[in-house]
Length: 73
Image (tube, rainbow, N blue to C red; front, side, top):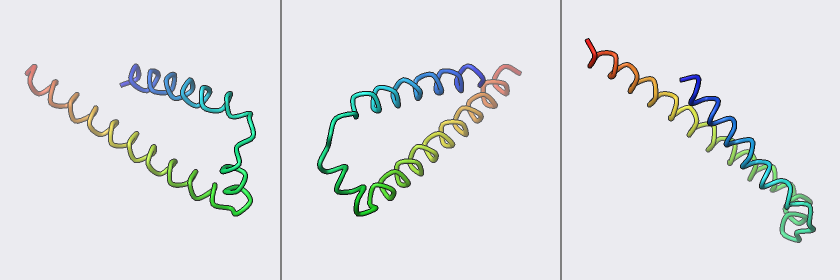
């Protein structure tokens, strides 16, 4: 379980870094959404989706670990 969390955090860090670094250019759509306040809605939806996915993966990992332990016995 710990390896999974470390790997996920490592991958998440590099994905976010790769998305943020090239985003230094001017993007008209992002400026428009930011000025209207809609960018916060997009960020909130993405956070909810990623949080839900992360929780789902943790639950599946725990269930599989429990099944593996039961199978060994």
